[in-house]
Image 1 (cartoon, helix red, strand yellow):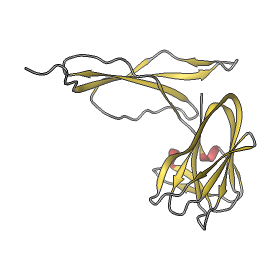
Image 2 (cartoon, helix red, strand yellow; image 1 turned 60 degrees about the horizontal axis):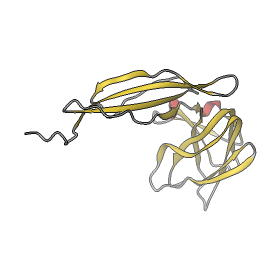
Image 3 (cartoon, one colour; image 1 turned 180 degrees about the vertical axis):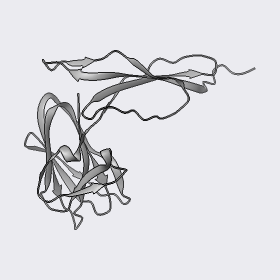
Length: 195
């Protein structure tokens, strides 16, 4: 006899919903929409417009037909590309298939910065780490909120370098390059503003 408590998952259902804000700044979520039904895949790619925020949840079914509860909603944001950011100082434009939207910007100049203003409740800075990377200073609305080390023994791309929740409203985020011990590189791929 097969043990009915083995809980071998055989498929998943996944659904999503949109996230927006109304004119008063109140968070509005759309109706759940089925994205995958009875799929056996453990990952998938979701395409959506830049600057948008979405939420996802999933449930599992085992070999005996038992279905789990839906997971809590998890959000994801499609960020602003590096080419949409305001630059100060000397920057180089990079093209790579591994970058968000195929591009990123890098600098070795101390104090060079990128900035962006938008309505948001969550800010995320996406970029690269590596053996020649120094540090990054993060300013929100003109106030220094974090200094982030970017060094990694092995180079990485599309890392979330820094993220924080903020009260919903218009905010300006600015990141500046801070070389450390001869490591001067800062590479930024995108900035995400979540709702």
